[in-house]
Length: 230
Image 1 (cartoon, rainbow, N blue to C red):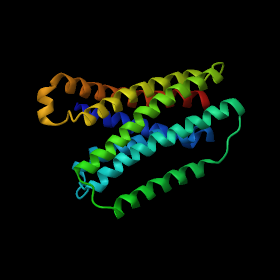
Image 2: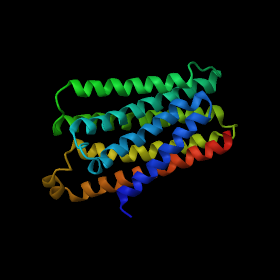
Image 3: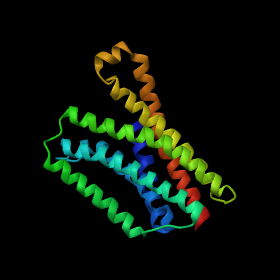
């Protein structure tokens, strides 16, 4: 089986499980689950473009990267909410608000892309660098935040789920960090690949492995939590 296809299948499963989880469980999990679901959108769009007539346009690619940025922002907000909830048992808002506000941000981003100049390769590269940078630094922040959540709920049956989330973000850090390294140092350029073949190949392997393990662990974590919370 093609490795990219395997990654896509895992994210389809992870995205479906996380969205279903957001519908069937308490409000405190909504932003977290929706954020992970949005990774699916960001992963599917670029891979589906070759098979969708008329979809191979720069604006679609730009939106895939932007949705990826929105994903990490939404789930980071969700873990911040859960941290506050684990200390105070207080939570504001409802599920509909989370869904609608996330959709509104995506629509606003789409409008922004459409009203501006058509993104060229340089602009798309910049957007992708911004996305990966957000993922790298917020993954580190979320690892520390989830560690604190675990300390607050370690006597609860769901505590192991947060250990799994730490592993998820370690995998995401490996995935997005490797991508960012390639982009910043322009290792995807053929000339640089020939100059630094080991660095490029190692980065690609780390990126693919991180992507694969992240998709697998996201699906497994939400399935585990769903069993405990049903």
